Image (cartoon, rainbow, N blue to C red; front, side, top):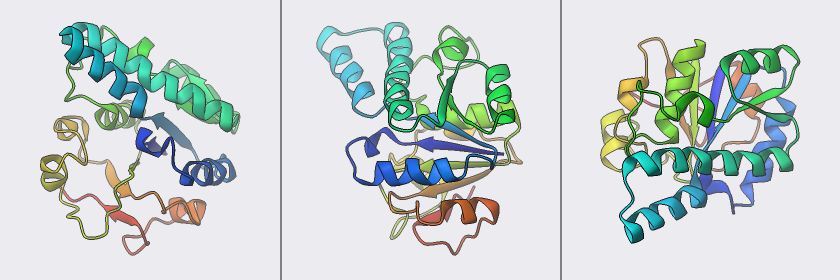
Length: 205
C-alpha cells in the first residue's frame, strides 16, 4: 500500500491536473492520498505572526488548511474520496476508490502528535503510513530531487521535508521523494518502484 502526500505547493502548477489524472488511472493500486497545506497553511502562518496566535490555536487551523486543499483536490478529481478515519479509509480502498485523508478528526487534540509548526503534512503522511501499515511513502514536492541530496538529514536541514518526520517513519517504511514532473507513467512505477526513475529519489536514512 502506498501513501502519497500531494504537496500544496503544486496547487497553482499546471502539473497538478497531470498528477490527479495519473492517480485516477492508479485507483486499483491501493493508494492513499494526503493533501499538503500550501497557501492555505501559509495564511494560517501569516495570521499567527500578525496576532501572535498560540500553537494550540494554529495546529487545528493548519489541519483544516490541509482539508481545504483536500476539498479542492476532490472537486477536481472526484475519484479522491475524503475520509476522516482509518475505518473509512479501508472501506474506500475496498471499493476501488482513492481515500483522501482529512486529518482533523484523528489529529486535532491527539496527544500523540505535537502541536507545532515542525509537524507538517510530511510527518502527518508518515504517521498515517505507519498507522495503516503502508509499505511505501511518496512525498510529491515542487522541488525536484535532481541536484539535491536524498539523505533524510540533508532534506530536513534544507527544509525540503519537515524536521520531525524522522520520528514518524518506522523501520519498514520505504520513503521516496518526487518532483513535479514525476507523474509520467506513475502507475507503472508504483507497481515496480525503481531508484533509476526520472524525477524520483529514494530517501536514504
